[in-house]
Length: 383
Image 1 (spheres, rainbow, N blue to C red):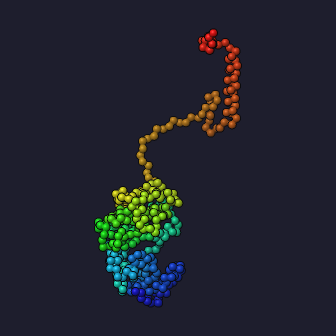
Image 2 (spheres, one colour):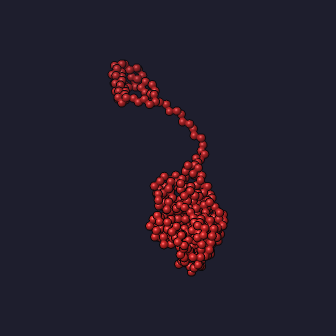
Image 3 (cartoon, rainbow, N blue to C red):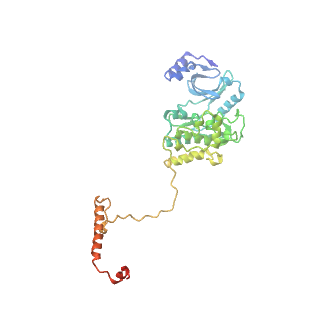
């Protein structure tokens, strides 16, 4: 339910959204309206998900800006989704990490829909970042995903797996800090395949789901490692490994379970170091046992590559035997040619002609001389 707000706030919010482009101007009818049952005035919609909408809001009394997520109106009769949104709020309120978003307020609208408030972030998500400039340089992509893994590691330490890590849920702030968003399908670690947070089989996004998640099996932190590998793949390649199957969720799930991805360097418009190729493919291993075993381990590997300039440190090897110095070639008469000095093009031909003349003279004069006795015996035909 939306309530009318005082004229002062209406004019202020309209001024803020006046130059925000057609999409924001189209939603300006909500500007200045009060979300019934809350102390917040709606400035504009920010993003819409499957479960709820996030608005930029302003506290009616304090004038403080925030982001507010509220359950969709058409889900008002879904107690399971209402419980999930409350659980998402409580989970994020427990987490304290620079790469996660905190929740500082929670309530219910006048028509019974839960909502929670978070700090307002300035920047854009990584899907928008890809749309603006295409594939990122390898070092920039690695640094961003390392931040995401830091946030995921904190969530894992608190006992939860995200289950929906994708570019849309990774937000890059203006100062370069990356935040992990939307714990709407997060699940307690060790809770099995089902649980109170699930609605239907395999919650998540097929484009970014781990094989065990696609199969509806139990998941742990390594499912988020796989999803982080997909994000890194897309950041450096400009597209995901199975984007040729977009629009066919069944085929996407099957590909995650059975199809080996090509290395990012095979399709990237930018150079991708072989070491980063290998790291991404390890994160995308079909078996969780073959991946990095934690988000912290993968983050450390990425930072190791960054410190090494994107290439692995050289492996120790046996000392090589030094080769003897190369000597200059011999010219006619045994004289060595000085390095860098080239013979005129007529020299080889002249040397060949001289050799032939010497051979002919030898035959001419040699035939006039008597052969020594031993040789004469060897060459004369017996009579």
